[in-house]
Length: 170
Image (tube, rainbow, N blue to C red; front, top):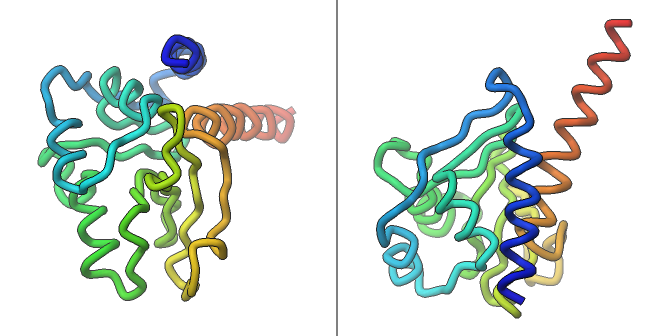
């Protein structure tokens, strides 16, 4: 299973690296134990695909879709700071097992549902800040894994947007 996950991650990274520097920002690799320390801090294990991508690029963005990284350098928008805010300070606190990793710019987040970690992956859910959820079952599950989310939301949507821009200029 681990080989399958890393192969999918490398394939997605290959696609990501094919975009121009005008659209793509890639963070530096994580070469220390920040991910392990973060797992200990929040009390949940992170999925392998998410950790693999962050070890290659500690945060990235493509055409406005951002994946947060781990570090104080992100000044208020690191995974740890956003996790703390969304669980402790936000007006509509998230369920503790949700890790917000990608904001949509409107106060909502794509999150990893860390209690559903199975075979080293977990689903991605979409948390709407203005919806009062009474139960986790009300939160939309978007993708079966982080890498599936990355393929669809980050890569496919960027390609669709580029194709729309190309056709509107023709």
